[in-house]
Length: 467
Image (tube, rainbow, N blue to C red; front, side, top):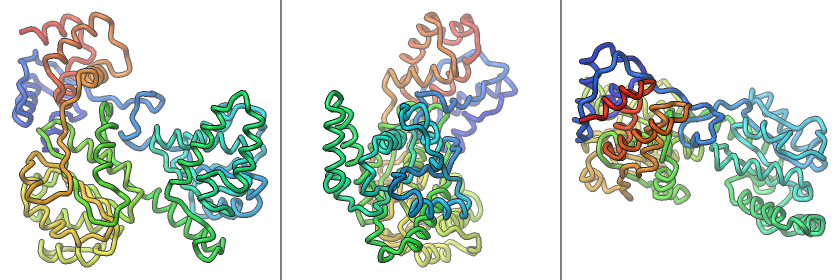
């Protein structure tokens, strides 16, 4: 399926009328969707990439262009010249581009005018919780911004509990209780802000992080070495391009992530199924981007049906799987049986995330994951297919049916492809609503038709949608 979709949505121009009509026929074939005859274009418009500044751009679409690898949030009086300085130096020596508020910025100004941009431009935010962290409204403002970025743009937030227990942060006890007593007195006219700070501390304390006193017997040097290794691993994750206009993706990604139950120790499989062009691969790639940093290794095998039909196709897929998951190019597989044995030998103790896209036969999964114990405890496998019965045969833990976009989502996606960054006039908007009403909620159809009509006159639009 993936290869056929690429032929329809390729970012190059169609060179002839016949070529464009051929693509529409393919669309009808793979999606069982009927499309009216459209007047042939001289060329189809390639899809533009939405600017990072567009607030409607989804966090699940693809990795933003980060300026910094790491942003360090810390209480200067507690750790600037000790732990944080050592951590910063180790990160820099490892080639990790790190932002640290090294100069004493004026604390009288609103955080949004000074520090919010470097937070937003950082791939990972490391929060060093110390006894005095909560006493700083500046630090609490940074933390609020960090967690907002985590939710909005997929930034990774990693807490370090330096000289304080996570429960003190979560429950605001010990030194944090004293700090909030002062905040409530100082900001009695704005108690909502204080309550917001309490909530972000609870959220941050519940994140997967590092507790110095429980690791390496409290030895800072060894602890920092492990931290740097973890950051390098997170930065090494290969993010996937998902969609130029990821309309309706986030809610569907949330549903699949919930089914995966990432923090249980079993090896869990989830199947995503639905008609061709409905967005199964798009959702799987978006989930991969959101979760890949949570695992020891990750791999996304796209277009398995087409590749497996090629000579040595399954062997090629096995080699890619092993290479991606253990970060090595040294494995040369001679046949499928040997590849299956190697996968089990090398990955049975490794917690991994694997996407198997476009399965249509049992033998494909048999070559890549014959049994669940081929992967280590806590591993997660996402399978996309058009065949629900295949998922039943595979005994996946959960099945997720991808449904069509609703009317509002369909209109938003169609307009994005038809007008790119521009807003349609009332006349164009009216015709757009009619097109969407007829086409329905199939993303691929909306993308193709929207791209076809892009930059065309109102007369051409009327002609295109006329019986």
